[in-house]
Amino acid sequence: MAETAEAQPNRRDILYVATGAAAAAGMAGAVWPLIAQISPDASTLALSSVEVDISGIAEGQIVTVKWRGRPVFVRHRTRQEIEAAQNTPLSDLSDPQPDSARVKKPEWLIVVGICTHLGCIPIGYEGEYGGWLCPCHGSVFDTSGRIRAGPAPTNLEVPEYAFISATRVKIG
Image (tube, rainbow, N blue to C red; front, side, top):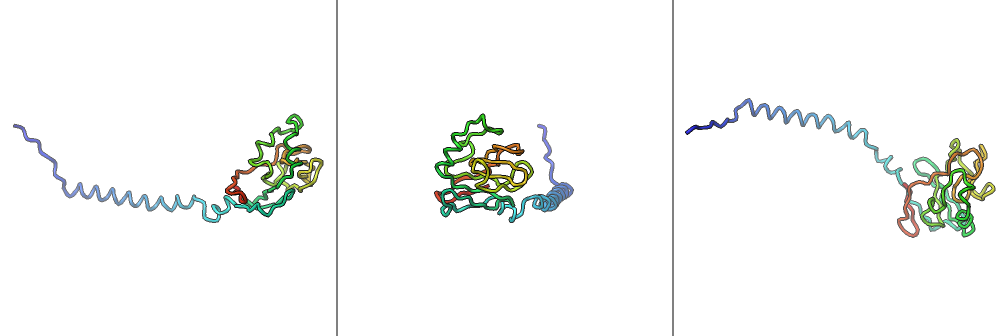
């Protein structure tokens, strides 16, 4: 009968394993701070979303909140404003988008308050369509935040938002 000899571990094998384990631990210790450095800090994460209490916003009122350092307009639209936005023919718009694609609840419009032309802040309740008017270059937005006249190339941006209750909305 032939015997197969089993290799017995010796001191050199144990040193190889110990050296490999120490090197792996050292690499993990060196990489961890690099990964932690590129992660956003707590203040950045805190600004990534904002909750707004909409219970105190009267019908027809626009409230401006700050989100990620930018103004966001929260508008409680009246029945007339909703009807005007819904009945606008898409052929009249340079950036056609139906009102239903811009709102989750018809009475609430939430848009980033920065003109898409050169980044100015439009003024509410101004302009021919009762929405916003950019005083710098004359862009006119309707009550759905859609561009109706002027040099702005696109509609006011609609941020990600969700209604978390009947009186609170989370933006971002």
